[in-house]
Length: 453
Image 1 (cartoon, rainbow, N blue to C red):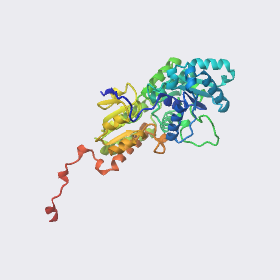
Image 2 (cartoon, helix red, strand yellow):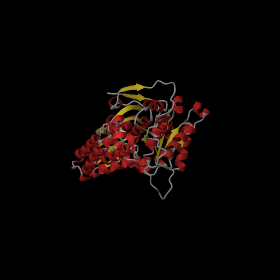
Image 3 (cartoon, one colour):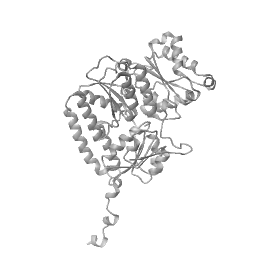
Image 4 (cartoon, rainbow, N blue to C red):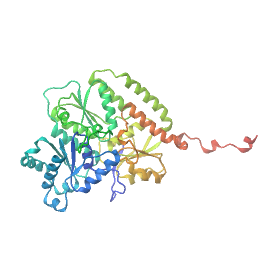
């Protein structure tokens, strides 16, 4: 059992975590024809917009209520009203999703009350869904904002159903899953004859596709119609511990039972997911996935020679930290240090001695003398200073292409992840063999006189 500690430094030196409003905005980007809005200053939105654009290399629709000193003091009703009316007139979205920021949370704006007043004063917005979620950026982290946004979507959009659709399943993916991961999971679920509804679905809007038409809103993702019929599913699959509260909210609203999958990377986690799909569908595991399982086993056999015994440090959001740690532990790697961003029930069960809720400076201090660092792109300078390799994982990843298309879930995704880690060590022959397996230097010495004869 890991000991969970909280950093008590006076200031964050090199931030690891990102804010709740950014996590909520990212979740809203997984809705079709949606315009996410940050209720705060222009700077808050600009920062988040730049980060998402650099990560996905896509056009990101994200608006602001443009609060200033005067409107912050007097209240933001007028700004919210103008933002909704302007967005509706110009972008014509089906959904306007608003999240708060630290500025408006500190003031205490009653945005739920604002939306009621706006609907009363402007009947023309009746054809536009409005969703609001409270996401103060002075507490919590990225995955908290994502989870709160999904809960708000469920409470505002999902409708109870009088009957169940035998093959329909709800899927609530966590923010640690990439668009590529979601595409892989959809293919796996559909192979069992099931019809999944993902909420949200960033694979549709941020999957890296070209469109013949310009749209000022999101293109692709979960439609309002699909969201509303989630009450007819036979089960909800919550992917990540962060989605437990969302699944509970959906069950309370519709009566649909749920199952939580803490991770989907690694052999054991993939086995559990496949077994659950087989039980739900009553369909035998397709031959394709039986073969993929054997391929993963072979890959684990190949990779463990280079990964086993390695001392790895990881800095990531709790659910991503869990997925990476458990997958690497299956190969015999040692998680020497783990730094994360926010509280989670998973932290105490991580395969490491200590988990620190801290920043990248804390990770750098714990990475000295280790074999590999895993974190997002902001950890690259720390890895360079320490002279150890860096494997980029999570968001943001702005110095590599294809961040949104990476796949690390299921048998196939786990195999590719293990190959990537193994190849890092293979690229440095001295580090390819764990230190505990190396012979002493004297064993490699050859006496010159004997060799000469």
